Image 1 (cartoon, rainbow over the protein chains, first blue to last red):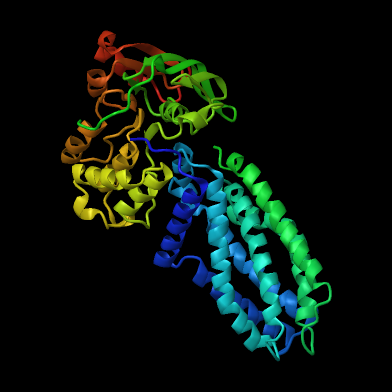
Image 2 (tube, each protein chain N blue to C red; image 1 turned 90 degrees about the vertical axis):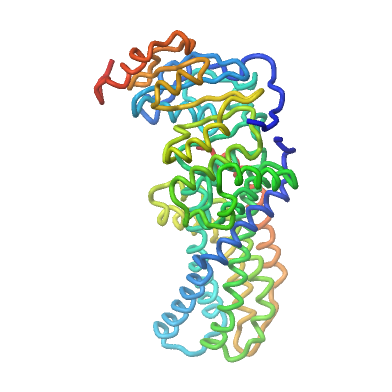
Length: 230
Length: 246
């Protein structure tokens, strides 16, 4: 009966659908990310002894919190594939291995968007005098989410193959994500400035983030098959 | 079994020469030479640690040999492994099933990976029925017994009706009733080539065309037609002292 090789899109949908179904059923990642983000906000609020933040400090608190919350999901995103044979299943099937990369990046992106739907109102309540800067931050956050999802999906299989999974992932990912964080923080410090958002170099920072996303998407597309070899 | 099987290609289904594998400095397979015609069955015998599972992973395209060559249906591994994807059914110690998905959800997922659409759904229903899991189609894998998981793994391995079945102790974890249900599904079929690892010498000799015996150090003890194997001689490879170096 061996069917035709499925298209990459079909495999992406199958893996993404499976991951989202498992997450909805087990609630292993997104609730932990949301709780972690809230805890970090509380720690910053008391650690900085400030009830209002603006400019670079506000952007830094928001972006670093999202980054560390993302690490929780990135560390787990390939665990089922390693422990339950998903890598082998993909390699036995006539399916494009890079579909796994795109599916995992898409799953991470969904997790991050859901996290931010929860975390942004909490951040506003904890730290901002008004929410006007958050609206233009949304494209910045979306592009940063893509950056985290793509680099996370690229790094996570290497980390998952290591015994020091929880250590290796962040050690490789954090230096790689620095350019995207610089761009997001560069845009954020103007958008979250006291007195309302300013759009200084807004387009430039968005372009840098977009370019970063594109480069790592291409790297993932080209290299992912080799990363899941035994 | 009644499943229609695709016509087997001409030439040997499996040919290996000097096939070896090491994990770091530890050699586990040493210079295996063998040839298996399409439609034939190869039984692999040997004590624990002889490299049987490693050999199956290489045959399944899941592991690269560190030396020697191996070809399946004329396609050299690992260079042409992509041409064989979808033609191999692998049943190993790990069921390759997601614990948080139900039985039918797992088969649907694997059907999508193999490009089976509507026919895959019918095939999944048929296989679940044949292994006695039709009433457990919605049961999650982590709520199943080891025997039920094994039966579901058999369904997963057979879903796409592979040309080459690679079976690592296929009846392990099954009670006699389960083994009776599963054995015919994994048995000979037109065009189906099988490589089976088992510790049941009599069963291996009964169903195999050729037998490969491995010493504990991963070297070949014998590679001959099943009809020429004396069961007592075959069993001698299991009596080698653990850790002994030949």
